Amino acid sequence: MDWVEELDRALRRSVSEICVRDEDESVIAFSGGLDSSLLAVFIPDVPLYSVAVKGSEDERWVIEAGEMMEREVNLVSVEVDEDIVIKVMNIIGSPNPLDVSLAIPLYILGERIASDGHKYIITGHGADELFGGYARYRISPREELMRMDFEKVVEHDIQRDKKVVGVWGCELIAPYLHPDIVKTAFSIPVEMKVSGE
Image (cartoon, rainbow, N blue to C red; front, side, top):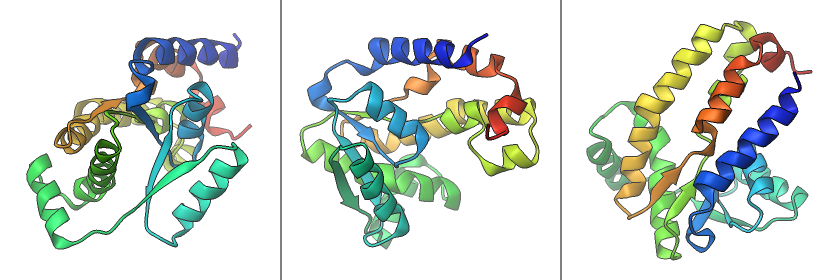
């Protein structure tokens, strides 16, 4: 089976069904990684936004990735203070440090894109879990671990992130969670996903 063709078809279907609601109101949460870069290629007319600490390695990488793709990236600087931490903890209903640290950038992004007149944030949620994007999968390539992590994205992470962007009137769109992509991803042997070839 040609997995590349299968995934190409599935991603095109996902984009056509769930991403093209109103391109004028949509943005891509861009990290410069593979998942958001693919989305930027498949949805070329939607602006790219990235949240990063000013002067950080992440910010430099996002700028470089945008230049390689010949796309402008709207940079949103992270300035975290105690008030934002408390607001985010209250919104997500949890003081869990990991959840709070993951939610803060989306909270800041939601505020910015709402002020810029956008509503929909297209994200790469689920891509790392589906396609073996974390180093731990290369160390221990087990499908059940990837499935457990993916279920956590669907049941927990996406719900948390919907809350923090929702306070700004924004919605998340997660094309990698489309059933066709999930089905195709889990039919690819784990070893093929994590081999690096």
